[in-house]
Image (cartoon, rainbow, N blue to C red; front, side, top):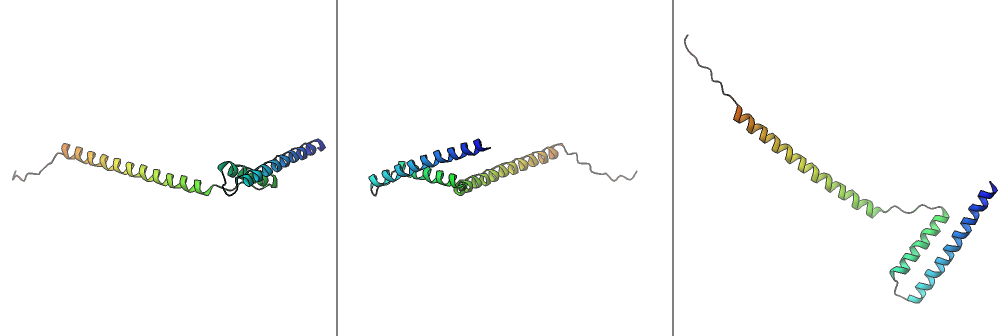
Length: 114
């Protein structure tokens, strides 16, 4: 049990050390870049923030934008499939009606005085 705790503490210490170095490197990069923030600096800051959140036990934020895009794509795909299915059913009904009209036998009664 103590070995597990020591291993966990050691892992946390190493993660904290990496986080500190990443945070310092991001700060140095941002300082050298001046007012111009590059994508590399943004990535370093994002990773450092994510690492800090992970060490604090906070779960990452949900990507609501991506969820919305996927939901809209699903709605669009569902609408397209439903429209295609409706058109296919209408064509099938028209074909069946035409077939019945071609094969229909009309019987007219004759009124003979027999």
